[in-house]
Length: 434
Image (cartoon, rainbow, N blue to C red; front, side, top):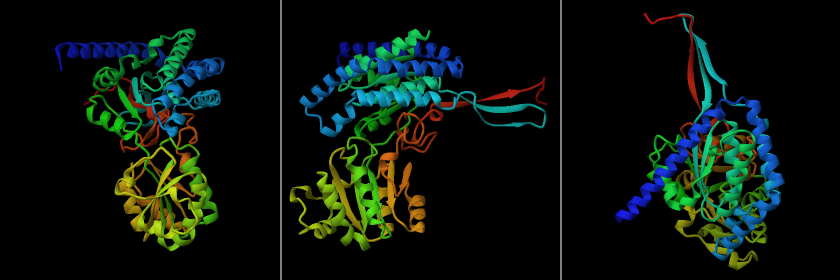
């Protein structure tokens, strides 16, 4: 790296740290507001989203057009899209967050000491929360709503593909903050600095309290490996559905089609289907017919391929699976399919190849459901339901910061409580330690 390049990188780092420090100063004022005032702020934000929906949708269409011209897949463009319908949904989510119980000041636990002191552990904001995410402008709205409700500032890196949409959203949010008497530095974007801005967020230890990456495996791995600030790992979604030998076939097929096709470019879409050998000959032709009618390309192991050969299915949608398929998150109309000799084999395969996001079991056998739920090591287990339900809004959180696949502090959809830490407060009457 040349001296000039190093100087430019240091300049970006200093600017991002200054933004984080300004956000921290503004956050102190937000955290001091009562819950009613923070709710009013969120309701004003929801109103502004509806009022400016036409403008936001127009700039988002520009982002989507450019993404299409640059060769982005249909599934990822769907994730990028923020039209008027989705803006209205986002505004409803913001209002839902406003209606949730205020997490700040909640007493997590407490007790009286023998000397008469009272100890309470209470929830408080984390401080400055940074997000690095890709082509998901709805995340901008979700993160800001959750951060403001929980008393946190937000620094955002939303990526090149959504730059126009995110710029419009951050400007809208800044206007609402000003109208509510708050410093717009509470919510800021480092997109103008490109990848250097993202790198600065990763290294701004002492300026940023938490960094959350949300995107594909490459992005998440890069952040986890390079960041010196505290991070929470959100997972790519190599999501599995296991069809047990006790399955209700009529119930299972619409669940699988929904999990795969309802939105293909999202992390809770099903990517793999594992079928117990005892029902594979009857079940696979039925589910394959439904999936291929929805234009899903099936990547089949040898047993699945043998079963489906000669079934009159579109040959161009039946592909021999490669070993790499089992670890691949398609984010497309593609699905890996294999037959397992037993539930033990299915569980072993899932735990080896899963990203720890969401897995589902379709079964009527209660013992099979309980064993699968106990032994599969993922953040969320769905039983006889679509994996598409793994979502903060669906879980009653209004929105989500992401789906945590780690095991410390937060796991699964991250909402208000996951955006808080705690402090201990000791109430005494002159006690001294002997």
